[in-house]
Image (cartoon, rainbow, N blue to C red; front, side):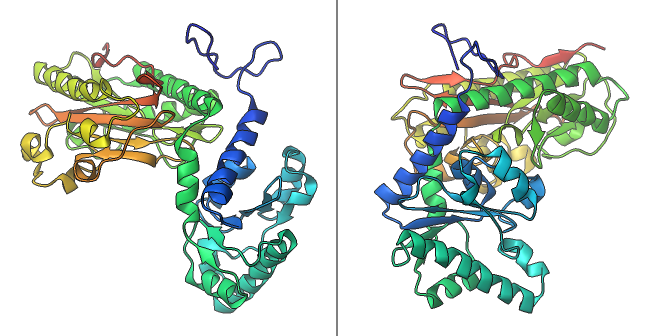
Length: 425
């Protein structure tokens, strides 16, 4: 949390400092989901195969290979019930019962393995048999709660499951995914603190670049130290993080090649999908191996101005169109890499909501926001990023993670950004 002066106390887990209140986080996330599903949309129940929606409502977690939407585990939230039911994968339920007392032992069940994409690996007859057991399992709970005649919201699309529910007289709606996105759009104070902590881990990962990157060192070695810094500081990586250098920085490869660094190479990294307690970051910084060229410094200045010109206007009530219009049209500035349409600029100058997943509302981009604006609202958290080429075959990339407050923004990412970080050689 923060004190009266705005100072954050990340990672506090003591009895004498009021750090993150996990009980409050769990309870308020669940209440937000219930309000969106049952009060605003009047569903009878919500069935989730999506790992992050399941985590949001149950505050349970199992290994990454169960995600996303594998069907190895799933959850069910029923109108009128205090807590959701988690159907856990295999014998991991043994641990979930003991680690998640807020659910109660009666709300931890075993999953019918065979839902989601994993079902396609079982063969047709096994898949069909699993669906029958799955539907019976869920329908028993709907009847117990007295909501079997009401609409069941789901956050996945599977025609076979929909047809099986229909045959049982249960009507389903795919609006469950959008309902949970809406519930997750506004972040609780505890969620914002989780995001601060993730950004702190990102800072440690950037520091590892400064300590490691030298002429002759490979991108793989740099990445290895970044991952080490993440896990050493209590973080986790979900199919993310990269660093790229030299000619692969323009346009942005968004990956790595393993090339070895040379003097005056630009190297930038994105710690995207690094997480702490499930909350992700997406956060670029640019480095130079030795003093950068004048043209690179000028490109960095342009990207920085684009970024902060847009951040400067962000507050509740501003639209995504107003933010996007602070950035130049892609074809006007990036003709050197063949840009003739904004469809080619997706992921370049843009912003995306961030929380338990890398992409949540809002999304800001000239390719959609100019014609289809969204209103920015208090409590949103998102990453906002810009890039630019230097005309010498290299590029720069910048990104901040922000929290929209009542009067403007709080910037959660802390690594210095005013200038390229120069690595002495």
